[in-house]
Structure formats: structure tokens, C-alpha cells
Image (cartoon, one colour):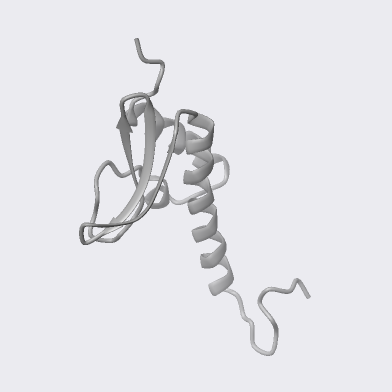
Length: 102
């Protein structure tokens, strides 16, 4: 008997957690297969969660874990990075280093 959550259960958990940080739903979608936009996707392989990214059939990177919390961390690392870039791009940086708070 497997104690691993299904992709649907993980998706529901990601949407619930994403709502807490106002993450856009589009960033929270857990993809189940390779896709043309080279977005990461999730495969449950036996007793492992595999989080992969590939483009045009070539594997770019792959991570695997048996821990759901680690998988969720990886997913939200990607989500929050995109949110931070989007926020930074929307700010006025004329004459300022955008990496500085001042």
C-alpha cells in the first residue's frame, strides 16, 4: 500500500498553499507530462516523486524524492521565483540598482 499522494491530491494542496501567497493559478498548475514551454512536470514513479524539466525531448534537469514536503518546496521555489521576477519587472528602476532596497 502506497502512502504517496496522487498528482490530483498534490495539485489540490498546491492550489491551497498558493492561495495563501496570492500566487496566480497559472503558476500553480502541476503539469503531468513534458510540454512545449519547457515547464517543470511531475511524474510519480513507483515510490518516488520525480520533478523534471525537458524541452524538445531533451532532459534539462531532474529531481527525485520520496518526501512530499521536499517536492512542494521545489514547486514553490519555482513559483516564488517567477512571482519575484514579475514584481521586479513591474517596478521603476531608472537610475537605481533593482537589487537594492533603496
